[in-house]
Length: 192
Image (cartoon, rainbow, N blue to C red):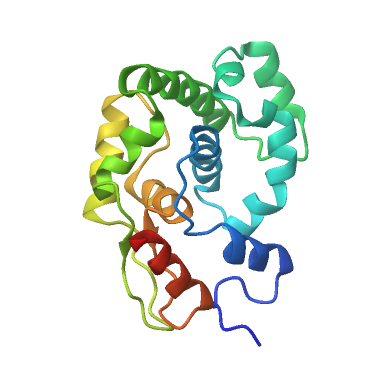
Protein backbone atom coordinates (compact mmCIF):
# COMPACT_ATOMS: atom_id res chain seq x y z
CA UNK A 1 0.00 0.00 0.00
CA UNK A 2 1.26 3.46 -0.92
CA UNK A 3 1.54 5.92 1.94
CA UNK A 4 0.19 9.23 0.66
CA UNK A 5 -1.49 12.34 2.05
CA UNK A 6 -5.03 11.71 3.25
CA UNK A 7 -6.85 14.30 1.11
CA UNK A 8 -7.07 12.30 -2.17
CA UNK A 9 -8.89 9.50 -0.34
CA UNK A 10 -9.82 6.59 -2.63
CA UNK A 11 -10.59 8.83 -5.61
CA UNK A 12 -8.36 7.65 -8.48
CA UNK A 13 -8.30 11.01 -10.28
CA UNK A 14 -7.42 12.84 -7.06
CA UNK A 15 -4.73 10.24 -6.32
CA UNK A 16 -3.22 10.68 -9.79
CA UNK A 17 -3.17 14.47 -9.36
CA UNK A 18 -1.57 14.10 -5.90
CA UNK A 19 0.98 11.54 -7.09
CA UNK A 20 1.99 13.17 -10.37
CA UNK A 21 1.36 16.92 -10.20
CA UNK A 22 0.67 18.45 -6.79
CA UNK A 23 3.77 20.03 -5.34
CA UNK A 24 6.03 19.39 -8.34
CA UNK A 25 8.05 22.57 -9.03
CA UNK A 26 6.55 24.09 -12.15
CA UNK A 27 8.27 26.59 -14.42
CA UNK A 28 6.17 26.41 -17.60
CA UNK A 29 4.23 29.67 -18.05
CA UNK A 30 1.22 28.09 -19.76
CA UNK A 31 0.85 25.49 -17.00
CA UNK A 32 1.28 28.19 -14.35
CA UNK A 33 -1.54 30.11 -16.01
CA UNK A 34 -3.70 26.97 -16.02
CA UNK A 35 -3.28 26.59 -12.25
CA UNK A 36 -3.98 30.30 -11.74
CA UNK A 37 -7.25 29.87 -13.64
CA UNK A 38 -8.26 26.63 -11.94
CA UNK A 39 -7.44 27.87 -8.45
CA UNK A 40 -9.56 30.98 -9.05
CA UNK A 41 -12.47 28.81 -10.19
CA UNK A 42 -12.00 26.65 -7.09
CA UNK A 43 -12.94 29.57 -4.79
CA UNK A 44 -15.90 28.37 -2.74
CA UNK A 45 -15.74 24.87 -4.24
CA UNK A 46 -13.75 21.71 -3.69
CA UNK A 47 -10.62 20.90 -5.69
CA UNK A 48 -12.30 17.62 -6.66
CA UNK A 49 -15.06 19.55 -8.44
CA UNK A 50 -12.52 21.56 -10.42
CA UNK A 51 -10.30 18.57 -11.17
CA UNK A 52 -13.21 16.63 -12.66
CA UNK A 53 -13.97 19.58 -14.95
CA UNK A 54 -10.36 20.27 -15.97
CA UNK A 55 -10.55 18.47 -19.32
CA UNK A 56 -13.66 20.44 -20.24
CA UNK A 57 -11.93 23.64 -19.09
CA UNK A 58 -8.94 22.90 -21.31
CA UNK A 59 -11.21 22.41 -24.29
CA UNK A 60 -13.50 25.38 -23.66
CA UNK A 61 -10.70 27.76 -22.63
CA UNK A 62 -8.44 27.11 -25.66
CA UNK A 63 -5.92 25.01 -23.75
CA UNK A 64 -5.46 27.84 -21.22
CA UNK A 65 -3.66 29.91 -23.84
CA UNK A 66 -3.49 33.42 -22.32
CA UNK A 67 -2.97 35.00 -25.77
CA UNK A 68 -6.32 33.64 -26.95
CA UNK A 69 -8.17 34.18 -23.67
CA UNK A 70 -7.06 37.83 -23.50
CA UNK A 71 -9.02 38.43 -26.72
CA UNK A 72 -12.30 36.89 -25.51
CA UNK A 73 -15.31 39.17 -25.89
CA UNK A 74 -18.96 39.10 -24.91
CA UNK A 75 -19.90 36.33 -27.36
CA UNK A 76 -17.32 33.96 -25.87
CA UNK A 77 -18.41 34.89 -22.35
CA UNK A 78 -22.01 34.02 -23.22
CA UNK A 79 -20.88 30.73 -24.75
CA UNK A 80 -18.89 29.84 -21.61
CA UNK A 81 -21.89 30.69 -19.44
CA UNK A 82 -23.97 28.18 -21.43
CA UNK A 83 -21.48 25.29 -21.30
CA UNK A 84 -22.86 22.93 -18.65
CA UNK A 85 -19.55 21.09 -18.34
CA UNK A 86 -17.95 24.15 -16.75
CA UNK A 87 -18.26 26.23 -13.61
CA UNK A 88 -20.51 28.94 -14.98
CA UNK A 89 -19.73 31.95 -12.82
CA UNK A 90 -19.71 35.25 -14.72
CA UNK A 91 -17.38 36.99 -12.25
CA UNK A 92 -14.83 34.18 -12.45
CA UNK A 93 -15.08 34.05 -16.24
CA UNK A 94 -14.57 37.80 -16.60
CA UNK A 95 -11.74 37.69 -14.04
CA UNK A 96 -10.00 34.94 -16.03
CA UNK A 97 -10.08 37.07 -19.18
CA UNK A 98 -8.70 40.07 -17.29
CA UNK A 99 -6.08 37.84 -15.66
CA UNK A 100 -4.95 36.62 -19.07
CA UNK A 101 -4.33 40.23 -20.08
CA UNK A 102 -2.42 40.96 -16.87
CA UNK A 103 -0.50 37.68 -17.27
CA UNK A 104 0.72 38.84 -20.69
CA UNK A 105 1.74 42.19 -19.16
CA UNK A 106 3.81 40.35 -16.54
CA UNK A 107 5.46 38.21 -19.22
CA UNK A 108 6.34 41.34 -21.20
CA UNK A 109 7.78 43.11 -18.15
CA UNK A 110 9.65 40.22 -16.49
CA UNK A 111 10.42 37.97 -19.46
CA UNK A 112 8.22 35.21 -18.03
CA UNK A 113 5.49 34.75 -15.46
CA UNK A 114 7.68 32.07 -13.91
CA UNK A 115 10.43 34.58 -13.15
CA UNK A 116 7.90 36.92 -11.53
CA UNK A 117 5.88 34.42 -9.49
CA UNK A 118 8.72 32.39 -7.97
CA UNK A 119 10.18 35.51 -6.34
CA UNK A 120 7.64 35.09 -3.55
CA UNK A 121 9.42 31.96 -2.33
CA UNK A 122 12.88 33.30 -3.23
CA UNK A 123 13.02 30.99 -6.27
CA UNK A 124 12.93 27.83 -4.17
CA UNK A 125 10.39 25.37 -2.82
CA UNK A 126 9.38 25.90 0.80
CA UNK A 127 8.95 22.66 2.76
CA UNK A 128 6.54 22.79 5.67
CA UNK A 129 7.35 19.33 7.07
CA UNK A 130 3.73 18.64 7.99
CA UNK A 131 3.02 15.72 10.27
CA UNK A 132 0.21 13.32 9.25
CA UNK A 133 -3.17 14.73 10.23
CA UNK A 134 -1.81 18.28 10.54
CA UNK A 135 -3.72 20.51 8.16
CA UNK A 136 -1.77 22.72 5.83
CA UNK A 137 -2.21 26.42 6.46
CA UNK A 138 -4.67 28.30 4.27
CA UNK A 139 -2.35 31.29 3.82
CA UNK A 140 1.22 32.31 4.55
CA UNK A 141 3.28 35.50 4.48
CA UNK A 142 4.40 34.44 0.99
CA UNK A 143 0.84 33.99 -0.30
CA UNK A 144 -0.11 37.32 1.30
CA UNK A 145 2.73 39.04 -0.59
CA UNK A 146 1.86 37.27 -3.84
CA UNK A 147 -1.81 38.23 -3.50
CA UNK A 148 -0.99 41.86 -2.82
CA UNK A 149 1.41 42.07 -5.77
CA UNK A 150 -1.03 40.42 -8.19
CA UNK A 151 -3.87 42.68 -7.08
CA UNK A 152 -1.70 45.75 -7.59
CA UNK A 153 -1.10 44.52 -11.14
CA UNK A 154 -4.85 44.23 -11.75
CA UNK A 155 -5.38 40.48 -11.31
CA UNK A 156 -8.76 39.31 -9.95
CA UNK A 157 -9.68 36.33 -7.71
CA UNK A 158 -6.17 36.22 -6.29
CA UNK A 159 -6.77 36.40 -2.55
CA UNK A 160 -4.17 34.94 -0.24
CA UNK A 161 -5.99 31.58 0.10
CA UNK A 162 -6.18 31.18 -3.69
CA UNK A 163 -2.52 32.18 -3.97
CA UNK A 164 -1.56 29.62 -1.32
CA UNK A 165 -3.39 26.85 -3.20
CA UNK A 166 -1.61 27.97 -6.38
CA UNK A 167 1.76 27.82 -4.61
CA UNK A 168 1.02 24.27 -3.45
CA UNK A 169 -0.05 23.19 -6.94
CA UNK A 170 2.96 24.82 -8.62
CA UNK A 171 5.46 23.27 -6.22
CA UNK A 172 6.43 26.57 -4.64
CA UNK A 173 5.34 24.99 -1.36
CA UNK A 174 5.68 21.30 -0.46
CA UNK A 175 2.77 20.53 1.85
CA UNK A 176 2.88 16.77 1.48
CA UNK A 177 2.87 15.09 4.90
CA UNK A 178 6.36 13.94 5.88
CA UNK A 179 5.14 10.32 5.75
CA UNK A 180 3.78 10.69 2.20
CA UNK A 181 5.82 8.94 -0.47
CA UNK A 182 5.94 12.18 -2.49
CA UNK A 183 7.37 14.31 0.33
CA UNK A 184 10.97 13.07 0.23
CA UNK A 185 11.03 12.85 -3.56
CA UNK A 186 9.97 16.48 -3.89
CA UNK A 187 12.29 17.63 -1.11
CA UNK A 188 15.22 15.93 -2.85
CA UNK A 189 14.14 17.36 -6.22
CA UNK A 190 14.20 20.87 -4.78
CA UNK A 191 17.73 20.49 -3.42
CA UNK A 192 19.28 18.81 -6.47
